[in-house]
Length: 104
Image (cartoon, rainbow, N blue to C red):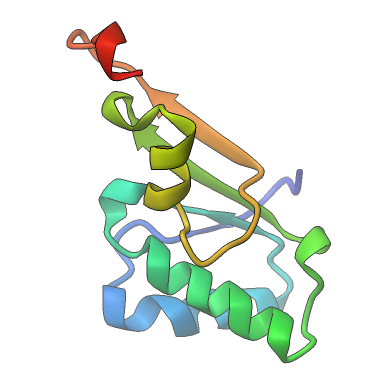
């Protein structure tokens, strides 16, 4: 896992794909996002573009996301975090007082 990364919190949705692409172009290999940021799909598009253009191989990237406790099921977590990225290396599952086991 790289020591430093590019975070997409507060990056406007319309700028995210290009921002992630440029970050990879500059040498970032860790991309950090979260479903609640609302721009994970666009971040995945930036990752895909960088891979397709040969800037980086997928195995050279470390992609991380965060999920709220209602999204812990594997099928839901894949859909909610970086849907354009084939592999997600790490997902933080945020817990709250309303953690309901029937939703897992």
